[in-house]
Image 1: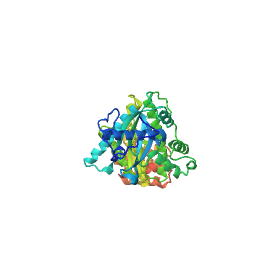
Image 2: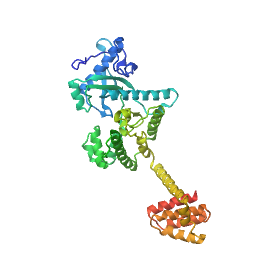
Image 3: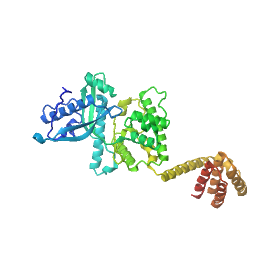
Image 4: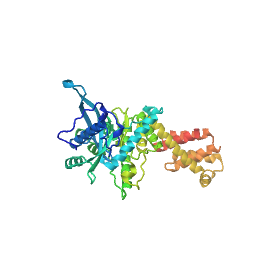
Length: 436
């Protein structure tokens, strides 16, 4: 029986009860440790410590399946007599929620931890991966009226049987990416909300960012839970992209090494049979300088949103962050390469159309009339037809009706005519195509 007034203060001979992982406790729900006095003592110590914390402390974060607390403990050392010293043991992260959901999540998280550990043991570079918080303890509590009331105030969903699951894992010194990037954006925008909100309160932070960057609100007409969550994530992703574009324009660069670690980890887990379904910005934690990065929240998708779930792309976040990890020069080069690829794709589609070739290219009986038209229209056309004439010119070069030098002369004349930006861009793409 847990006693809040006089919680048990067991002093374990080793820090196994809190500071080191005991595999016996990774999933201790329903286990009986009475046959082993040391395990029983440590197990009861942890449960009392957790119960005391949950009854009085406040949450620090939220996840899909539960609410997150930070738990630390000062324990007296084994030094005898009056010289006993108080030591701070490392903090831990404590997640609380429906025991059925949390048990599966804890199992998935420990599986992820084991996958990364095995890869490193087999010779992989540990710096190539994000870290996974190790699961130290999982068990259930029957919430009495006092505990139930406090946990509900903290946002914990208490099942009808009053049985809550708890799992203890490594504490991560850092913040989730959404909090870090939202704060970065508000600071760069010199938002007045920074003076009025608690930056550690994500709801307040999200509201401020939503106002400053005109975030859309999730809506839609979906009736099934899986589709509603899909729509919600889609809107959130679009909102984040708007924010990332601002950061990108303002010169912020997300560390590429950090992004690569996340991508490598998601891939390794997927290749090992553990696909992440919800890799949004709040499920990735990073240290202040982004050098240490962690993946959290391993809730199984179908258990959360049902068998009819619309599967979410685990790479959505890393794909959205990719542009933020590039310098402005790299981004400009990538954007140009994409525009050229799109331009060339449109050109290839045209020349494969025999009707277009006959109508646009073969109608000219001689090179002189072809060059005359191209000289005039490429310089003077002011609408979408410009691309048609550029494609005719490119095809004429490829079919040897016009030389590269003749084509470049026409295009350079067009550049010299001081065309608008949209036209300048198309002409430069044509020059690149002709010269390639």
